[in-house]
Length: 428
Ligand SMILES: Cc1ncc(COP(=O)(O)O)c(C=O)c1O
Image 1 (spheres, protein in one colour):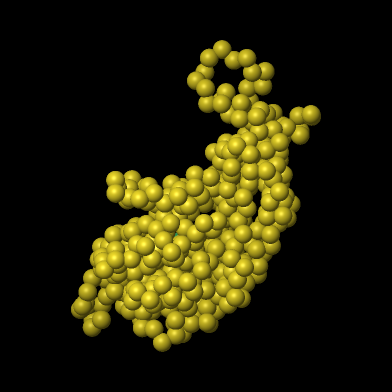
Image 2 (tube, protein in one colour):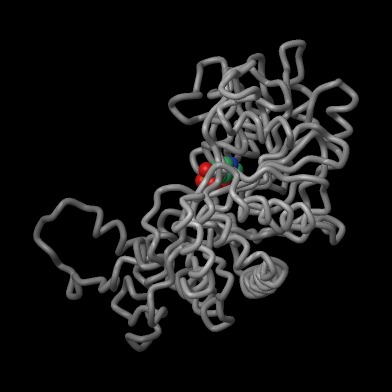
């Protein structure tokens, strides 16, 4: 075995010539928006529902096939406004345990209690059967999620809500541009919230929006609530917040919105390539979305069986880091085990806990090349092939310093890819 065939952790050359960070946001050149931005800055009309935000909202509504959309300053505020506009000010909101912490946080900030339900066996979305078990007379909404940008099965959840007279809302923060039966998601149930954070396939740096089906008044309510709930001058009938989008964010969105379909299609081609290269690797389960879904693939999740793969998921992540490839363990821990929500009475949620314990989220970019994707899958296969030595090496690194018998103590992990994408982050 030559040095170059060995994993970087064992002294081989890192497979990625350039660091491959977990996300790689790209934005339009400033020149593309410079005239409009300069004009907005010159007039001082930079926020408070300016003309570019209005144009952006119309474009989003056309794209999603809904009658109206309300733009917001971020995804979490969009989820909070969605809940509040649907009437949630207390009670219990059923959420999947497998999601980013922003989902239960939004519920808690609306004065309601998140009640955690499990995800579907073999999938990632909220399990309608387990959600049904959680419904009580205290339930004020079901808030489903599209984890990793994979649309959850909306039909079963909407039917569940209708059967019990409970609003069904979607935290679609990771999934803007995803499709179901070929049509963009966003018009189902009682309403959806999206994020345009820099980690997403479509980004306005920070930003988000709320959409709802035609005929709904929910978006109009969100538009009031995001502006301090002011209705008549400065008077307010209820507590509002400031969640308005800026003109700068809207201009960035307008400059990219025509590219969303291409981006989503490209991400799906990358996911297909990941799957083809990894499905046969012993001990890996690759993500297979529902057949009717076209995900927005924020990341590509794989599940690691340590016994068969030879490494646990943390060892795999460490091995990839040495190859200059940044993978993450989203969404882990599952949200019902976060310190702020864990409680002794919480029942086990085996599916969500299993995913959270074994998942590795691999990078997917709007401009990921097939060579970059192949580098990542080659690194994973190489780590599997050398699993016993990789495990021993990691154990040696973790052992407190003592007399070293290792002839090659430098694993040469290369530059830290954590900040290589330009967005230092600890969020999904
Ligand atoms: C499921 C989910 N909900 C809400 C959010 C919050 O979105 P933002 O970061 O735009 O506030 C995120 C962020 O990634 C998310 O993944």
